[in-house]
Image (cartoon, rainbow, N blue to C red; front, side, top):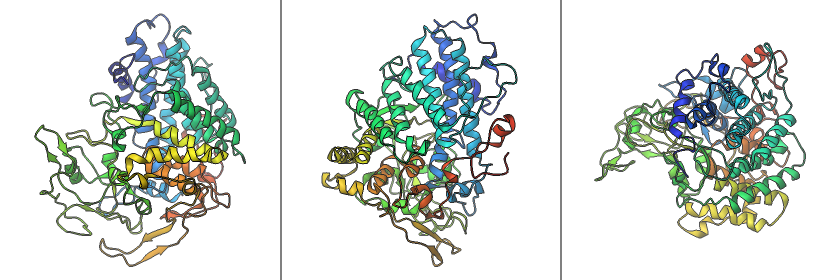
Length: 569
C-alpha cells in the first residue's frame, strides 16, 4: 500500500484541516460557491482539496472525542470508563455502560453532526464533479455509503440526502431501515468496479467495498428485524470469500503489527483511517486510558487523564497462553521505557525504574501498579490504579500518544471471521470455518495446539462469566461487599465464536455490533440479555438503537424519535 495517496495524502489532510480548525462549526459554507468555473477537475490539488473536506469529516465521525470508536466500545462487555475516585469523569460514561442513557447522550449527537457534514461535503462535490471523473466519484460515494452504513447501525431511521441542490427550506424525509439498507447496498454495488483495485492507503477499492457489503449483509437480520437472515449470510459469504481469494491480502506475522502508528505498508489492512503527525491527530485513546505518569512506560510526554479500562470479566476470559491479552492490556507494576542504543524505546523495558505513583495503590504505595480488578462503575467507582489499560494501539515515544495512529477499519482477519460465521450459521463446510479461525489464532499462541479451534468449540457456549459483578466496599484495598449474579455463557448461540471475535477485535469498533447480532437460546441478543460488571440484563430492546439527537428533531419536523426514548420531541 502507498502512504502517499493517488491524490496526495498531505494535500488531502491539509484541506481537511479547514474544517478541523473549527470542527464543530456547523455553518461552514465553503462549498456554496463550488462550480465548474472555479474548480479545475484536471488538477490533483483541486480535487484533493474537495475530497479532503469529506474525508476529514469521516475521520472526525469515528475518532473525535465522543466519536464512533468510543460509542462502539463503551457500551459493551469488554471496555468501560468508570467514575475515577479522585479524578472524576462524567455520568455519561456510566450511563453508557449500564445501558440507561437518554436522548441527551453526547456521543450520538457528535456522530450525527459529523456524519451529516461528511455526507454534505460528499454531495456538494458530487454535484459539481463531472461524470467523467468516474473513480473520484466512486471514492466519494464510497465514503458517503460508509457513513450511511454507520448511521444505519446506530440510528436506523435517518434521512437520505444525495444532493445539495435543493430548494431553500427543504426538509428531507426520514427513511426507514429498509430504505437506508437498500441505498447503501445499491451505492456500493454500483461503484464496486469503477472504484478499481489499487491499494491506495486510506481510500476504498473493490475489496473495501466488498467488505462493507459483507458487513451490511451479515447484520441485515438485525437492521431489518428478520427472523431468518439466510439470504444475508449467503451474500456476506460471497463477498468475504472474494476478498480472501482475490484481494491479495495476507495476515500479519504478529497481531500487534496491525496497530502500529503507520499501517500503510501492512498487507492485512484492507481499509484504515489514516492519522498524521502534522495534520491529523485525533485518536485520543491514551488520554483516557492512562494516568499522566503512566505515559513514562512509553517514553511519551503526551497528556493523559486516567479513565478507561478493561471490564474485569473480559480480561479473565482470555487464555493465559493467548499472547493477544498482554498485547492489548497492561496490568501490574509499570516500568519506564528503556532507551535503546539506536535511540528507540522499548515500552516497560527498564526494569530498574518502576514508575512512582503514590495514589490509591492496591499493592505498593510507592509505584504505579494496575490491577485487573475494578470496584465498580460509580458505587464507589474505580480507584486510580484499578483496571487493565488498553495498550493495543502503539504509543510512540515523544509528544503524540495514540493520536497519530492509523486506525484499521477492515482487515483480512475480519473477512476470514465473516466467512467462518456465515458458514457456521448456514451449516456449510463447518470444518473450513474452524480452520479459518484457527489460522487467525496461530500468531497468538506459541503452541499450534493451543491455537486450534474446533467446530464444537465455536458452536458451543461462551467462556465469558456473565453476571453482575461489582464490589461496593470503600477503600482501594477493601474487597468485602459484593453484588454478584452468575449467568455464564452456555446459553449463547455460537458463543465460542463470539469469544474469538472479542479477543481478536476488541477496540476496533466491533463489539457492540457483534453483541447485538449474537443471540441467546431465549431469543434475546447478548447485548440486552446478559449482565456484566455493573450492567444488568433486560428484556428491553430500546438500547439496540441510539436516540435521534434533539437538535436533528428540532431542525426537521418530519423526524420522529426512535422507540423507547421520550422527552426529545
